[in-house]
Image (cartoon, rainbow, N blue to C red):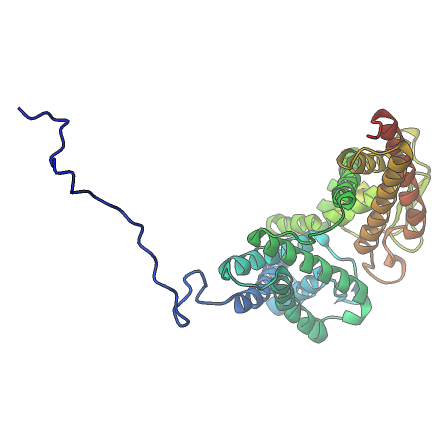
Length: 407
């Protein structure tokens, strides 16, 4: 009986060989299957335009929702107000009634930036992986596609000359969002070849800003709890109804980032203004006419702040210390004088960046006494870099002493 393990063929001259089949050479006219039927250029430009239109639909829809809960006005007027608010979210000054408004609701701007981020990433993924198109080209086309309808609508409906600087600031944010989306889709670094010691600076600055935003959020929540009755009375006085209440909530969420920056300025000691004759600061509060938004109900009453409120001044110290800690810990071991310098520079840079954010969060919400609202920039320009820079020097020096340099 033949064994089950015996081979069927016993002739050693017969053998089997396997070879990998070679792919046919790609001709000059052969299609590249990795390339999309639609190239990256129309996708990037079209994605930018679609992001702008989507943003307009979102803002106009919220305004129409509020109009449905109110009696006066028409659908055309509500769409016009929606267009003005959409332009305002893109840094273009708007005329609402007889008032000129230039405060950018950065919450809405963040949503627009996310839409551009997604559209740029989609355009970058659809291109051929063998393509030599740079991330800068894709992000530039995406941002341009977004800004063209914004600028066109600003010329027709808005007042771009009243806030050119804020329009430029929003344009930079849109371009950064597009660059981030395209770079993530291509797995490329935005700025390769930077020196090693600078690699921790962005993280340290972002960490310091998040610290100040967190302090502002804690301060804002504390104010909402302490003055809840006042906020509720302002909301009831508006009598928005269900649909109007939803629109009012979304509107206040749109300006929530601005409120967090203003509260962060208060925590640094500089405070903020709610009009040309109003000051809200730990040293003392003096307010007059306030906008009817219920969020302004958290503003403390006139007079000097309590001693407990002064503890908020520690927020700037913590932010500067965190910036220095990130830079020193991620960098190479060095002497204490070098770590003091790097920690102080990180703290000062974080303070200056917060001043820029504070400038971008302010503006006008009306005429006369409701102009120049937002953080008090001159005191903040002194307090923010000084507080964070000194904290960075102290923490950098301490870390340098605790972690001796390698010889």
